[in-house]
Each structure stands twice: as C-alpha cells, then as structure tokens.
Image (cartoon, rainbow, N blue to C red):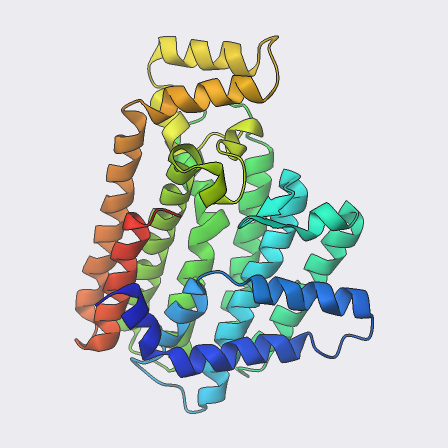
Length: 324
C-alpha cells in the first residue's frame, strides 16, 4: 500500500472533513477575515492528521459517524491555527511556497485570525458531545503552547540536553498526532489497551515526523521547502541535526562563533547549513527518526489486522521516507 492507497480508504470522509471546516468559517460576517480563513483551508497540505483520525476511527466506530467527522475537522483546524501563530512567532513570509497571512496583515491581526481558528476548532470538537475527548483536546492545546514557550526560552542555548528537544517537538508536533489517533479510540469506546496502543502510535509517529521536518530544513532546497533552508537555525532554534553536530567541542565552538559572532546575514547561516548538511549529524538524526517510526509500527500489532492497520503502518513509513 502507499499513502495514496491509505488516503483512498477514507477519501469520502476526508471530503466531508473539508466541507465541515469550510462551513465552520463560512458564516463569518467580516469578508476580509472570511476570505483569509477560506484561503488557509484551501492551502491545505497532505491532511495527514484528519487521515489518521479517520483511520484510527475505523477500529471502533463511534455510534454517531458525524462525531468522527467533527473530531477530524477540529484536529485539522487546531493544526491550521497553530501554523498561523507559528508564522507570526517565526516572522515567516512564506509557507508551502505561498505568501503567509503574516506577510499580508499586521502581527496583531494575524494572531487574532489564528485565535478565531482556535475558537472554531473548539466548537467542532464540542460537536462530538464527548467530555473526555474534549478534555484530551484541551490537554493537547496546553501541551502545544507549552512546547512553543519552551522553544522561545531555549533559543541559542547551545548546551541544552537532548531531552529539551524531545519536550519541544512533543509540543510542536507529536501531541497533536497523539490526539489524532487516541481520541477516535476514546470516542468509539475502544478497550483500554487498544486506546493506549493508538496513543503511543501517534506519539512515536509525531516524533518521527518532526525529526524529519528538522532534517529537511537542512537538506531540502528552498523551493521544495517553500521557505529558506535553515530557517530554524536563523532563529537560533537547536534542532536534532544541530544537536548532533555540536556534540564535538570544536564544531560547537565554530558554530557559536559564526551564529553568535560579529558576522551576520544569510551567508553566515548558509555556511552553517552546508557544514551540517555534509556531516554525520544528518544520518544520525535519520536513524533516530526511523527508530521512532519503527516503534509506532510495533504498537499497531495490538490492533486488529486489516487494511486500516496497514494504512497506518504505511503512513509511518511514508513519514520517514518523504522529501518534503
């Protein structure tokens, strides 16, 4: 099976999720905001999170299928809201090769647009009418914010332990994928051991996903990324490739002198990107991403065999093989 085959298993429901998200922002009275929100939905992406939610929901379907659609739409809306806020925090003008809302509006207006999406996401998850699912949603949002704060307060901390990185990417990516795979099991009242297996699957998948994102920030070209290579490094964010590279003292001294020294500008970051790109730090980070992916796949053995379990395994393999 491939990612396309996995998508085909839930294609009809994915279309319903798109429609649900569109309707959720369709009654906005302020035309400029309505157009912006519709544009964010249309810019899309691979829709990995709602795909995971729908596939996980196949093992123990909830009594009301519409609740699963609302859940998937709420998770993707939450993801979209975090991207809007990320663009403000990072000062990003491009995402997926397209101009961000941040590039068109003031930071304050962009943040409020992201807040609006957060509110819509909360409204959608409330449609599930399941108190524990709503609590899991709230917990995931708290973890996401905590991850962003951890990242903000660890900029240029060249001596931070690897666990700091794990904590940050749990908030940045893994918490939402964990929510995407655990909450459908809760909604469908799955046995506790199957719910926990799906939660751990989402966690490990999310960790692998973000590590690959951080690798691509060094090895992919700007056109593929839709933003300049080394964007995190430009902001002083220590990702796993940087962490592995600076474990050698002379390498750390060289990077610190370049990034924190008197030279400034894109050419300095480009120089450091090339150093890391051609080093053993990239294969080390790749090996770690593959380890998380393999852990995710191993968790699936607790679940009933079939095309939906195979599809989840295929997504876990895709995550570490992708080039964008």
